[in-house]
Image 1 (cartoon, rainbow, N blue to C red):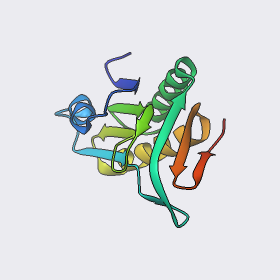
Image 2: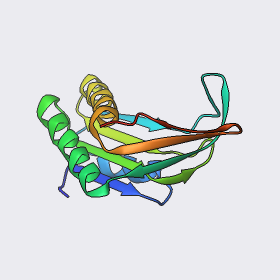
Image 3: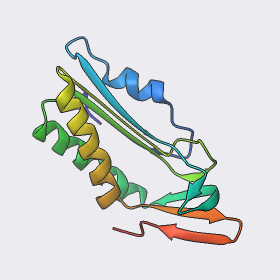
Image 4: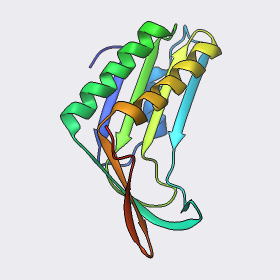
Length: 141
């Protein structure tokens, strides 16, 4: 991709250490990481599992755009945005975003910007499975 951007959409388990190792840099004093995990409840209903699906070419393109925008908007050095697809169980990790910068504030802001924008614009969809059925969540963009 580039020396300062790592993008991944995969059916393999995500590894926090991969994202951390990518953004780690001796010039950076701050690394901010967001790890999304599958929780066991939504609106009082017990979640059994989640299924994530994506239009992968567009998802990768949009995630790269978010990374480039983050590099332009904030004083950050590197950014990793990784998302899992397929069936995920409770406590599995569907998304990791890691950002490094010389100072913590830019890392925090870029990390928040990246996850918020990803949820709004990237064509990755989530289906929640319950005892009583299933429902698609965030059926946008």
